[in-house]
Image (cartoon, rainbow, N blue to C red; front, side, top):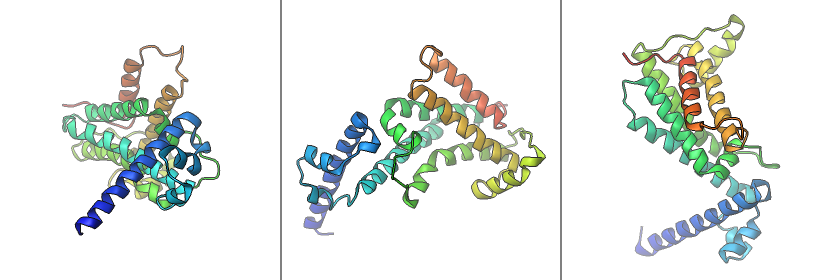
Length: 231
């Protein structure tokens, strides 16, 4: 890459970041459904036709914001996993859950974009699938490590659920027993349900000591998934 090409690439990256920052401010003020390329262009001092060279449509800009949000919460989960003691699987689980919650509370509008109500008229493309799976892959990694070190107590599996559990295991974690894989999906949903209740104000005048409440909830989800205490 020549110096001119490098300068152009840096300029494009800076302008792209400015556009996305302004779009996030618009999300916070008006919500994703009202995201407008014209309004974003006006706020960053660009004509609409110039902005279209960076994001051809509202959906392209939304997708970029969604991917960024998934990547950010995924990075938070991965960093928490890396910092936690490897042999203590329940502690790793709780650390990751705390990191996801902390990110959500610090970035409520971005959290709402990826875990809130669907944006009318928007259909997420395949580009979002990998980033969306990052937190799930971290939770799977914890259960996989616990399973390979014989620190998993297999959750009960209703016979009626076995075919679905086997399908889920084949799709998400072929090296884990179906009972663990299907329970993981359930506790994954419960984790984000608990976080969503807090982010969206459903715990107002219900839960006061939310840090302690969450830690207890996360630990119970880990036990439900089959994690055994450290030896």
